[in-house]
Length: 227
Image (cartoon, rainbow, N blue to C red; front, side):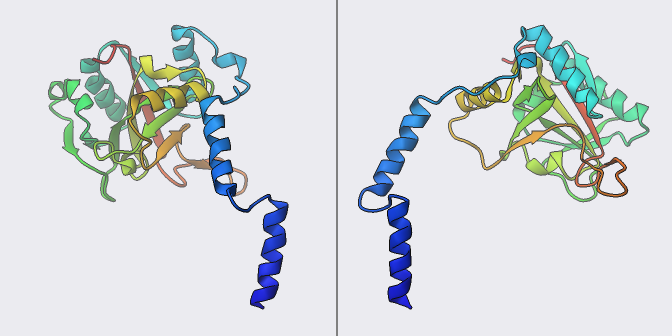
């Protein structure tokens, strides 16, 4: 059996042009492609100036049942979060990512909003985290996992609140990936692309929110540039 197997694998490798130096040639082809990739087709709707991208992002996010608020400064974000929770009769209690960039927000201005820092647990109803990018053409958030941005904050609580600087909104996915690559020294363990709250229509073809994750998604857009 070993001889027959070797014969079969030999023919497969020959057909696939595998042999001495094959791995080196494959690595060379990949390196050449990465050095000079061919551009993809970019949907026209994402090719807009900054304010047009922000408006399109909001339109597309709201189209998939996300709630979007926009504030001028980071210090104004806590009031928007508290108002969102209050208007939906949700608890003024949340677990928030320990990302230091969220410290620029004036959380003390909302004394009724009780916050803890860390990852989400089963008992947490509201999670607050930070997105590193947005894609205008689909209203998609780009979240990169890190110790300071636990992934579970965006998936375990029934209500997810994500803060996003409008300066980070790109027109298309290709631009969003390039921006992420320029910012991070290396790719994180996971990059999560989130478009609206969790949903399914598997049951009787009726749309159900929260089937596999949060049933509510609130995006707070912040116009103030990041330091």
